[in-house]
Length: 301
Image (cartoon, rainbow, N blue to C red; front, side, top):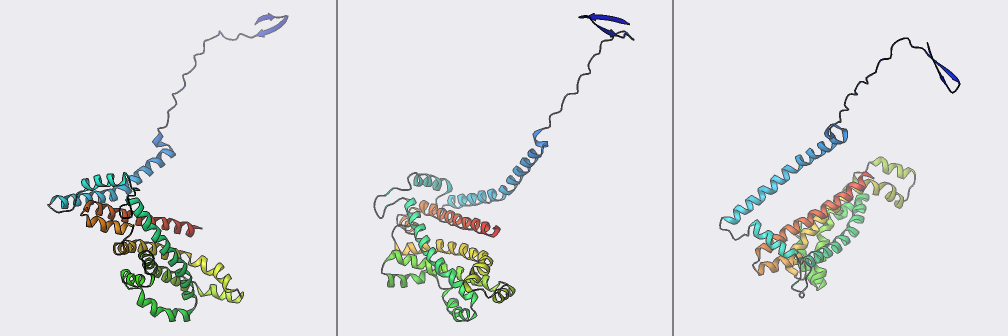
């Protein structure tokens, strides 16, 4: 036993074995998990693959369409090709809101004027068609009374209503709105009425037992149940309204995308006509997709 004295205090150390140097064992290197082996990396990789997988069919479709378009343009036809049309579109949209007078305005003003007419005519059709659809679906007598009239008027071509509008309203602007109104009202009327008629009879029996007023029947039973049908009718009607305005403006003139197309035809500017076709299609698609998003939101709620 060895005794070591430190500051008048004794510390006994027992030496049973000679001291040996302890060499620490090196720790195994920590393996870093690659990003794509983590959960977030796997989700990112899966989402990217799904995105490419879903994008391939439309990209191939567009490529095939452009190739076919270029082939037709190169076979001696008078239709401008994709490159020429693209160049004309860049020049056209470089200043879409110029204004050189009533008959010479940029394509932006023409689109806005057409959308304004569609908004007014479509709004009037919704204000009249949706309540009428509720009444037709709610009251059997009214349904039987109006069904023959709707059946006769609904298939009439929209442009057949234009002379009536010009005769009664005396101006091209309200006549165009009238054509949009009378053409887009039918999908809202029919879809709303169909939704009301498909409500289970048990709901109406409960309302009758509780002695609910017509206002409460509408707000608590009819409207929530029929809302998906109403939104479907609205989505169909906006497509009809945008389709009709182009044809109506070709005949009535003024500032609008339809008149712009006819004016470009008079100028033999076929590239601008093709651009207008794409513009009409894209705007119509955006209107329909926007209403579909609204419909899905209300459906989830």
